[in-house]
Each structure stands twice: as structure tokens, then as C-alpha cells.
Image (cartoon, one colour):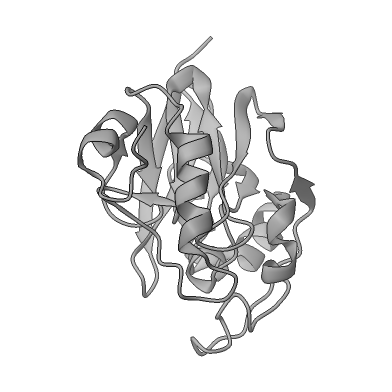
Length: 212
């Protein structure tokens, strides 16, 4: 089986990390969090020989979904999200897009359950519900490659803000303790903003990390 690869585009007013995963030697990608400029994402993928097979959302904030509708329309790729985020995705007030100046909502094609294992284009991931940044935030764990797409749940030596609608710091730290702290130290974490890190590094240096 060919190795699983990951690439990154940084887009939008919040410099959001958008990731795409694919098997080495293939051109079908899973695209995560199309932050903005869906047409640009689609064009860039095509110019580099890639086709978007699926779109994953880690949560519904505007800076992670503004490009979703255009990318879905152009690529015909279905959108996947954790079921706990449905209300926020469908509300321009809750997802802060209205206040940010461009109201936006997204209806996912498929709503996923916590702990569900999904395979798309021979790439398998597990859905980890990690509420706190929003009530339906989640992470996607590709165990084979020890890749965690953490959205705005976990950053390098920090965590996502919790002062926006449906956020809760207590819930966020509990999510980290129950879902992320149990992962192997050598899992690479790809966050929604900033640089990548590892679970092991965060155990040592993240001030929000639970004391085990």
C-alpha cells in the first residue's frame, strides 16, 4: 500500500491551514477545511494534478468553511462533518460568518458519529469528537500514518479560543484529556492555525495539557 501523504494550503483572513491527504502515486485527495476561495482551491488542485474526492470539516467557524460551497460545487465532492456541529454549520450567527461580514452556512452531505471509522479513496480515519472550541468540534485521526488533523482544538503549545458561541474551556480541556492525551507521543498534529507539532511535545510544553 502506498504511503499516505499530506499537503497544506494557508488561506483566508485568519491564515487558516487547509490540508489535503492522498496516497502516494494517486491523485484523489481528501480536502480538510476549505477556509476561503473555493475556486482558487479547486484550480490549484487541478493544476497540480489532484482531484478533490471528499471535503472534511473540523468545525463550522467561518474561517474554515467560507470556501466550502464553491469547492463542493466545482468538484462534486461530498462534505463530511461531525453530527454535533450541524446546528452551528447551519447558522450564520453561531458560526460567526455574519459578524465577519459574509454570512455563510453549509449543509453537510454526511454527518459522522464520534468514534466512527471512515474509509475514502483507500484512506481510513477515525472521528474524534472534541467539543470545546465549538460544541461540535472534532479531530480526524489517520492512525496508519499517525496523523491527527486537530482543527482549532489543539495548537502548538496552545488550544483554540472558547469565547465564541457554543465554546467552553472546561469542555475543551476535558476533550483533550479523554481523546488526545491517550494518543501515541509520535502522532503528528496538524492544527487549524500555526505550525504542526506532536502529541509528545504538547504533553511536555502545552500549559493546557491535562496532568495525568
